[in-house]
Image 1: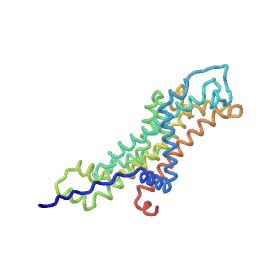
Image 2: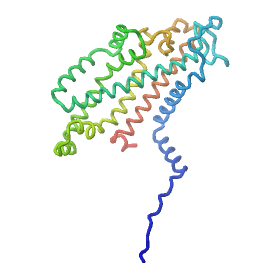
Image 3: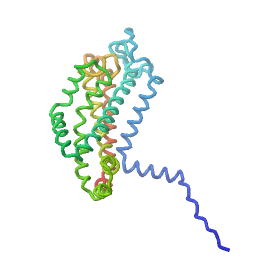
Image 4: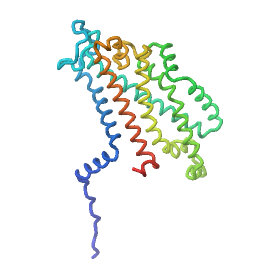
Length: 294
């Protein structure tokens, strides 16, 4: 009789080992963890805004320019509006614009960059167009686009996305130019793989890590540009709560009511700092040359 042997069952991963792994990651990437926590906090605040804040559009003239108190955490502005409610709802505008611009720029830039790096004739046309876009200051192009159309979040997203395209296209193009001559791509081409399969199956994975890092910087830049446009009156409509709108409308009351500018300015700075810290951490982890030093 032959003995039947069974493979030992894999030992379950204990909770302690998972916590230890998380602890090691936190010690190695403290700034990345800090940025992620701050960003998650603001995303959560934006999601539950109706539950934790009142009506940001409500104007009560009898409570104009009241300082922060237990009832009004961030005080009120010159129109009697609750600054806390407007800061919370302003997070929605900034995060929607930042994430949307990053997603659109990466998706469109990835597609254009893949074909530009693979086809020489297409590259000559696209790169001249990208050079032209890079020659125009992003803020001026965004102001011009918003001025020609009625202000809305969609128009602001489109106006900021277009100036961001050239950096993504140039990044993807440079990667494609270096990868398309590697042996594994040549092997796929020799086996009869079609161009779309070569581009999206064999070449595109090499662009994912740099694009993730680039998307974080685009997101931070888009949040700042949106605040700048709103401050100049060329962004979202004035009635929509936005950190840029709040700073612009309260600048005349800086000496009398500094909290009306301080609160949205701190929120804006924290979100941009969090996204940049997250981007720096991702760059260190995803770049093989840097990760060996960690």
